[in-house]
Image 1 (cartoon, rainbow, N blue to C red):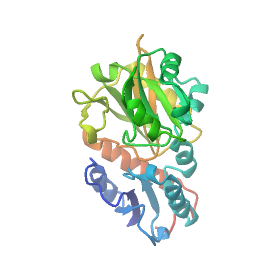
Image 2 (image 1 turned 135 degrees about the vertical axis):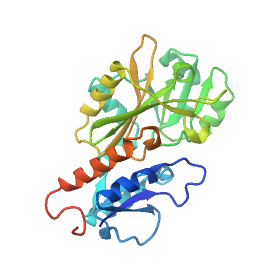
Image 3 (image 1 turned 90 degrees about the vertical axis):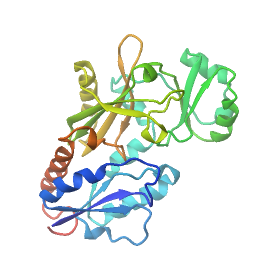
Length: 297
């Protein structure tokens, strides 16, 4: 049986994960899966045929250390998914600017490096809004994310959090509350399933860990096309991807995030999703050149 490591955290307490749903279909294809915390010292990565980045939801606290581990995996000769070059590109949210230059519609964004040097009214003016969401360029799980209006006391806290730290500011999109944020999931470049996420009352964060409500959805043809264009803009086809969209005024589906590192893939929301993931991973490995992918099967 081939061996696959799913990179995770030391503890998933407080998080929602359903990755175990893919273990049976992978086993049926000859894969044994071991969850390995990425911070665990002394791991012999060469004993795995594949390493898949999954629930590493604390990497943003030590991004360089995380990349160093991925480097070790790659040096060992073991196949890594998603690929390291995609991870490096996707880790900083400035990747969105690359996609925008390629014609992908984004939520309007102001970029900065020290919020204390820019007056809050200037950010609001540049975005043409009275309320913004502020987040770090390197981040996950809505950590250090603020919803701020004019004269909000939260600006002072944000100024401390983003002192000499890169950030992006976007207008608060009301449809996130009224309609939700759509997530389209892809395996091997092919669309698998979609969900819509809405925040709990009096919140704006859609993650389950913050009380967000998740439900499956059949995406509209317009949303499917928006997702197809995003995936087509990538130089390399990822094993897995999740594209998050919101609807702007006028009906345009704008990309909020393209998650290529450790996205929740919501396997439990679609009965066929675990099998589709297992097939994509197995086919990806089978297509590797002879001698690639770690120890021999």
